[in-house]
Image (cartoon, rainbow, N blue to C red; front, side, top):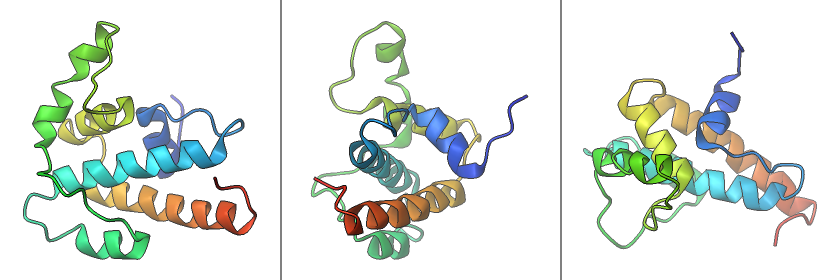
Length: 128
């Protein structure tokens, strides 16, 4: 059994694996996946406002889909098709959340790590 940190587990689930070649792009893609799945999981709207403010994340101007809708797109990826509406990371994280493998607290933790990491990249001129 591979023991992963909380952050590494979420990165693994989302399939974010190009850190060495494109740290900024990988981090930002992962950041949006984490934030969007947190938003989907927060039906009551009582969990996400504070982390979103901290991350300076602006919600999309459209209706947030149900997490079940996004998780149901797994078949598109399993059949080798791309789900145009959602990224692989969003679908994988939605499934993991729905299955109880990850929690809102895990998503917030990962978002906090990504927020600090992207700040470091930005300060070092590694953003684009």
